Image 1 (cartoon, chains in turn orange, green):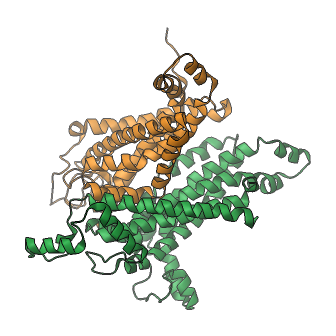
Image 2 (cartoon, each protein chain N blue to C red):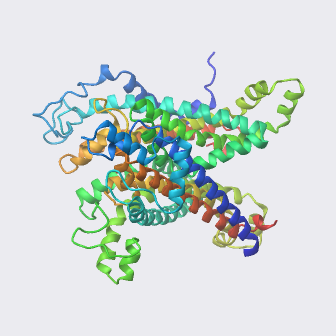
Image 3 (tube, rainbow over the protein chains, first blue to last red):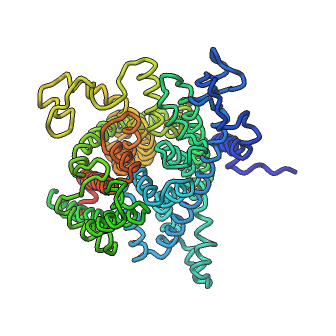
Length: 286
Length: 338
């Protein structure tokens, strides 16, 4: 007997989003195995090669080469490592801080809620890009600090949305009943409230991963992320922008890579929101 | 109405000033944990350790941080933001000349985003339940996945490099001179009666404004659609139908009035993001605004500029939020009772 797959796995959005995301994760994980070349290997006699299908392309370099003759495809595959690492770690970190504060604020209410609310207000008065740039100045460059900066900027996204949800759930009768049964605050939050807000949390994480890919690309575009030896999509864009007339292809491929990654996470997030949210009606879920 | 709106707006403004103070303290402390020594940077590399020590004392860097912050704050309140370490110019002048350019860019982009967002939202709502819905909906996720800097690069590739229709660097053609004035180029050009400058500035604005506008419109579309869907569940819409009003009139006179409110408050938040989004667009289009100033300052670890520009971004966002909140009060009579 096989059980029918759960509703969220039958949604076309979730499936297509998940496929794209898994594909990129696979690329990142298996980069040394599947990349045709060393991403930093320079080939100065073959710079600015167009993609293999264009006129003058070399089948050895399927997506062509950049200004130093490095293989674009290999650099894209290795660039996925940075993107996925940041997406996973930064979104989980931001979720952890944001969610804990949201549960505390929404559950206890009162003064602590007001305090956390003010903190969110202060954070929201900064455009996210500006705040992450300033934090990068304070923390110094490097991948670890990019992740830290994103966490310190984006926890508010979770806190804002989740707090409202927790506020509603925490006033429900079944939570009061659990408290009357002698559940501690900790147990009431972890056993009664967290499961109720889990669908929202998962959706937010998925969308946040897309945002993180963009922020990492922005920071590496400005030159504040990884060092020059590590290929990253934003860095590839910054390099290619200087040679826009020589080889537009060099610019197009990393743009498409970022776009596909973000699109995958957005599809996944949107699909999950529709299928996991129990309050949506059947028609809205389609 | 003004009597009720005014105190509320006043309270918002007071809160904004408080937030700005907290922000300035945070900025100061974040930037001063940094390993860079401003005293050493402002002296030639041949300076001796004793000279650097003297400079540190002169700049007040040997004092405890809270003292330093208070000194800095009192100078800022007198309009003295210090001078740039790298450019060796007054920071206030640098920020003052860059800020209008960025505000101009952000406002025009917001107009583009609003127009596209409202049209798109109405279209998304119009196709509800039809076979077109999944396609249009898919399209809106697609749009949502392209951030402003990818649009900028696309536009440069297509309209700048391939078709060569529009310029994509700076604010003006190199042979034109900036007219003196407010710094809002479009306004200055019109005041001076220089339509050639106005035209050139407009052409330079098209690509960055559309890149920002398109990137920020899908969120507006989706919120407008879902608030329209909510409003159409209400009894007064059914009643309007029963009275035999046309669909267009129901939308315009009844539904849109209420559905626009959540959209408006979202647009306030969106404008904050858009204002931050100008940073990268400015860098890509070599547009001489706050974003380019900031990125240069970050590369040179030019603290006085980073502090001032950070504050400028926050101040603009807070002003916008206050304006949007006041507008919300004016448009939503329910909030005025008190």
